[in-house]
Length: 95
Image (cartoon, rainbow, N blue to C red):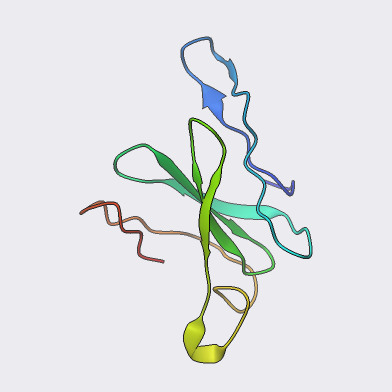
């Protein structure tokens, strides 16, 4: 992925989905990692700038971003996000 947004595939019609999730960072950086929640309702995206954000797949609406409160940072990670893990136990993502 080398774009500042992620594209969703619509299996029903075998076409790109109408909603294109785009992380809402101050500085647009490319999406480098993604996962889908166990329930299938959310996509979680990570960028090369360390930003991690969750989106509703059906609407493309952002449902929040992750930050590192311990370090008082505005993003979740120092540097590029290489992978995102979803444990799937409930709708809580482990990043």
